[in-house]
Amino acid sequence: MNRQQLALLKELTQVHAAPGDEGAIREVIAAHLKPFTRIQTDRLGSIICSKEGTEASPRIMLPGHMDEIGFMVSALTRHGFLRFAPLGGWWHQVMLAQKVRIKTSKGSVIGITCSVPPHALSPEERKKPVEIKNMRIDVGAASDKEATRKFGIRPGDTITPVFDFEVMSNPKMLLAKAWDDRVGCALFIDVLKRLKRVKHPNTVFGVGTVQEEVGLRGARTSAHVVNPDVCIVLDVGVADDVPGIKSEEKMGKLGGGPQITVLDAGMIPNRRLRDLAVDIARKHRIGVQFQLLTGGATDGGAVHIHQAGVPTLYLGIPTRYIHSHAGIIHADDYDRALKLLVELIRKLDAKTVKGLTP
Image 1 (tube, rainbow, N blue to C red):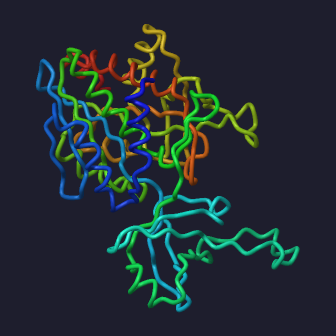
Image 2: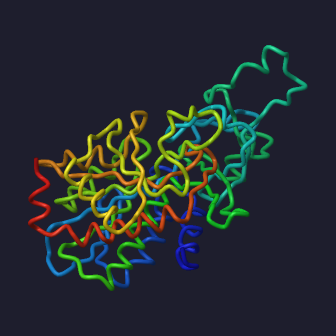
Image 3: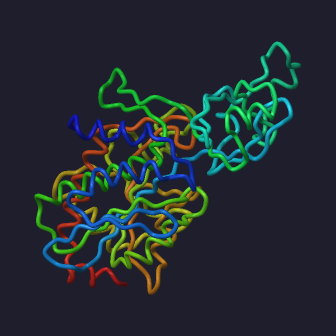
């Protein structure tokens, strides 16, 4: 991974963009790709960046969702604390005493999820997890009027975690918030940049989708704009090489290569496209891993049933601690995914794509 790629990953992960509020990420993507792609947006806010190769078709869609898991202000208490609703799947045990940012009409406001000190809890209370519906956010306001009039906070404002991008002591390990799915956005940006120097027999669409975490909504609308012949979903995978997971159940490790998913909760990927990706990986000595993910879905769940159907594959970057305030990826997994994607796109000519239909 070179410095430019590292800078891109840092730039993307540091932006705050919860579902329904992805404009800042859209601007970053446009800045990187406007010089050499055709850019348009759908009316929900997804960005579509197209680069034509030697042929106008097949049309290859590379979606990576722009939104990150976050929250929305639902109400303010009279003492100035915020009630909130989750945007995306959160586990309550990772929630307490975490720094967050609220985007308001007057700018950003920093807050922290409230946590009762153990000194004030009974032994029984300490054993019980706090449910998200009972949590509040402290923004330092003395009342709801101060929070609203002075800070500009109102119901509907979005909230995201605050966490700095860090290169860890092992420089291959990258720690940041929002890998899900800024790593997918970075991948399609880098793929399109690399295709400037590589012939490809198709047109490639890098698509930053909106509202994936709340129902794959941008994938549906952007698929109508692209009308793809093939879709390769770019998202995080689950790196379960951590304490607490049984060794026989582990399916993804950092540094083991990108994950080709054979099943998720929203899609059975196209088997012929999967086999093509595996064959290309083997030919170019690109290490890959396989993943079965029944507890989650990606934009592929919406795209693969678009119109008459779209051959679709889900390629994931192994990531530790997804759907929390921060996670870890391995630089080599990113590099291998980028190489595999470019080689796969080079093979997707009209004849090959026709052969993907069962």
